[in-house]
Image (cartoon, rainbow, N blue to C red; front, side, top):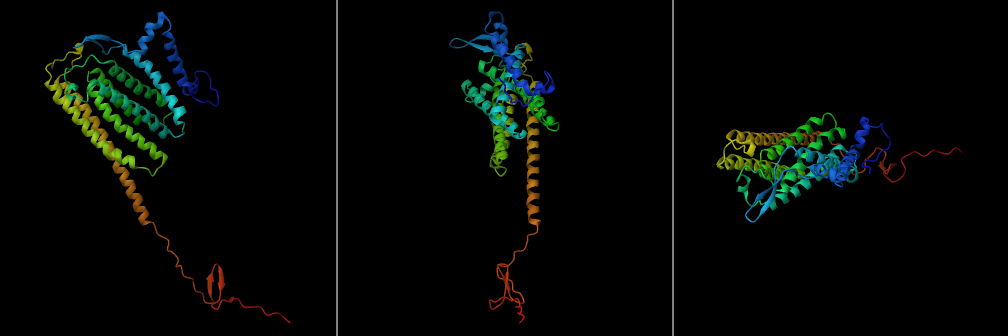
Length: 360
């Protein structure tokens, strides 16, 4: 099964061969893991890559529930879903977008990802009751034992943003674009991995839902703009939502970390039990969130000011441009007559040209 249409062949395992066939290589590796499920000898190892590990039975009010915590084996699961993300990226690129426009393709890929993540994250947040009970974001900290869907969501998120790093090479991103995209990817990895490893998974889900919703609106606006450059209405809606989202994220982080965790009974630093609830820990988390939101807000304000300045300069140039004078609609008089439809006529309707006398 080939994910990319090739017009010429490349030497085996050369640079161009890997770039043009990386999705096929990833598909073969995924297929090998799936085939391993068919044999008893390799099934246990295959499950290590496919399913989340470290499941335990936790007693509840009615019965027992299966919960998960994190550990080194999660790296194997994340690596498997990195290849899944590479394959899905190639499918969207080849069969849905298939446009020779780098920014359009980038926006299309991110619209698909953010839309699926928003729907998935919203479903998890609603079914787990985090929206209806905001106090659950900090109560009973540390949240070491996670439901299956919460852990699987975090593993898939880590896999997607890790897959974005080699995609910079596979997609041949321009050198001037690499620093911006690297910073963008690393910010997501730091925040998602931090929420997962520091047992702030509930708060992380709400913040991701807010952030992804804003990003979905932005990249949708970019798609409409690339289709029609005069269509900027969605950008105006995104600009209004962006500032409100920053405010909500900061408020929620201060409420949950600054006030909620500070009133939790267990304030001891105990990494073995997953408890990091100390004053230094809370200050570092708040500093990271506030710094990220302040940087995003500064970038947003800088971009808006530049956009308004360019728009103002364009309007000023149009005002200063000389306007060609319009000719009057009336007929232009001449000494010997006037012009009408490109023909010179006399006042009495006869031709103003002198007649030549015929020689006898």
